[in-house]
Length: 243
Image (tube, rainbow, N blue to C red; front, side, top):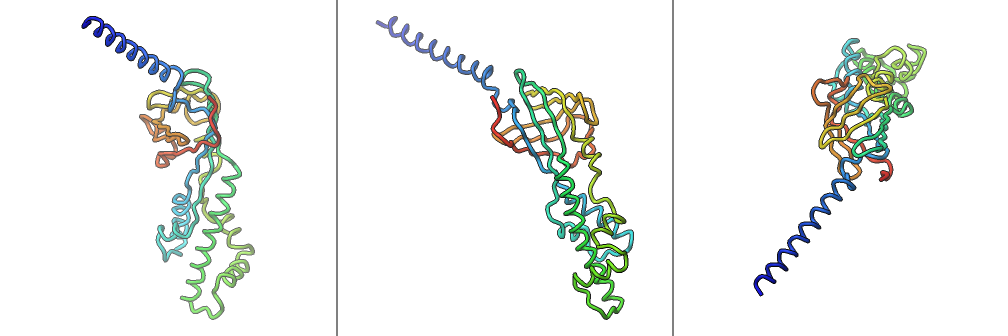
């Protein structure tokens, strides 16, 4: 009787262990989970701090500063440029990728940056006019008219033409982010081998994926990136990934 019970218990344990091993094998070979990056992703690169620093530096150069860089930044909207990143899995934890900066989002961001800068510039001009004892009106519309009369163009056009570059060049961003090639997704490291575009032949980045969010937290080793301060980069899945 005891031997029969032991045999039953052993059989149940063996079946349970076999089922557990089979389930783990299924997860390992057929459910790549967080290491399956297939799909189209997008992120918004923040340009607000960069643009504010460029604007503030130019205002310092012309001795028109009565506000801080933080004040300039506070006057600007959230300035972002969209980057798209697509992965197509062709093997276990590997496949192809393509990445590109969206030119239309860059142009819209650049325009918004100069419009915000123009508002700051007009306020500083109005302040200088009042300090100089100017007797006319110095509200936004009147100051804009004075700037147009003095420079032969609107404040936005003047700053765009004669002022600082508020954003990095589009070509600079494209050189940093655009490219295509193959990838391998390790446990915590994403290795991208560029076959077209890119400032480096390879990028080795720490990454983590959680559902519809992909976080690239920086390049392993040397700071190859032109903009290392922009890490971590958070991408959102644009559509349901293929499996």
